[in-house]
Amino acid sequence: MAHEWNLCWDDMADSDQRGTAAEPVDDLDSVAMLTCRISLEIPVPRFTVRDLLRLSPEDVIDTRWAQTADVPLRINGLLLSWAEFELIGNKMAVRLTELE
Image (cartoon, rainbow, N blue to C red):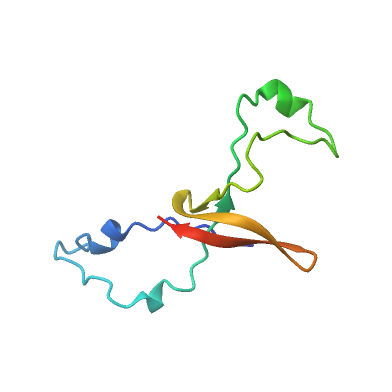
């Protein structure tokens, strides 16, 4: 089971329980192996709860998003980059096109 971690760098620099300032994190090795959620979002304008309730297998949802337009890529909900979809063999992948 994957765990979700919400890290805030400000929390790491807060004072410890004795009231003295904690050491700043200079070495990212301590957090490098933490998992994070990556999501790609394609906006669907005017999608309603009624539309959601009527969904069934093989339905096609009109996103009105241009096929060539980059999509926002978010890490733990924060916009990190823009990306485009790409096929690698029979698998879907994304190519980063711009970093925020």
